[in-house]
Image 1 (cartoon, rainbow, N blue to C red):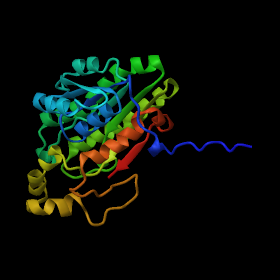
Image 2 (image 1 turned 180 degrees about the horizontal axis):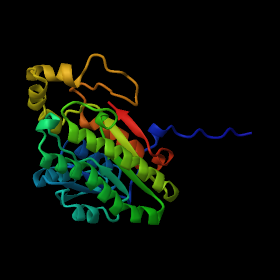
Image 3 (image 1 turned 180 degrees about the vertical axis):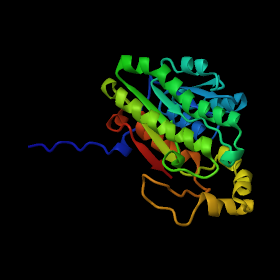
Image 4 (image 1 turned 135 degrees about the vertical axis):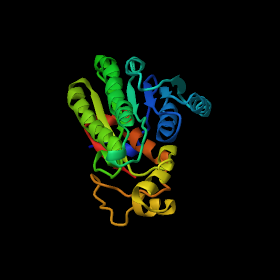
Amino acid sequence: MTAPSALPAPHDTPLDLGGRTALVTGAAGGIGRACALRLAAAGAKVRAVDRDAGGLEALAAAAADLGGAVEPHVLDLTDLDAAEAAAAGTDVLVNNAGLQLVRPIEEFPPDVFHTVLTVMLEAPFRLIRGALPHMYGQGWGRVVNISSVHGLRASAYKSAYVAAKHGLEGLSKTTALEGASHGVTSNCVNPGYVRTALVEKQIADQARAHGIPEERVVTEVRRPRRAPRRRSSWTAAGPRTRPQRRRRTVRRTAGDRGAWVSGFARSSV
């Protein structure tokens, strides 16, 4: 009797997105750029969405020798109708774009709060809404939402960001429930602190809000010594954590093997 051949482990299976179209928001830098390059390397045609035209051009140049292609798409996600239209025909959607302001609630500008929720919660809703008809029609689709540890627990002085990420978690789970019978999965990736321009710009604001010198922000605010290690809770990631590590988690949920997991929030450090 011939023994059945062993199935490859999930991490050994190459990601093949040939013939697929992916859309990544916030693609000009940081985690979004890393994800766009990885998806292009897997053969996808990547619609790279960002306000930063120069950053998108640099991304397209970096992807020139990869298996897929990167198509720069300059778009401000506060234009919600345009965001929804841009997602039409998308097979893999990565909601990554974000912005941050560190202020106590009583000093937080209401217009900035509105903008943060528009870009980080309402725009993902509109992008998903725009992508689902095509995904449902073909019986296959992947929605990957780049959330945060702040989607799992709160942090002082970040009311808009925390509210948006908690909302994104709920949106992702609802998308997973509705998409299950259509072959569409939806998952969250929840990084700790990652060395991106968004995070680096917060150092001065964090220092001012907490009343400490800037050099103490990394060790006392971003990397608390007594951080629980449960995967579903806070994970302390030091300043050396880079965007390239986040794309590995996105890779695991973007391809065919991602069919086995949906409605999940994965802490990733």
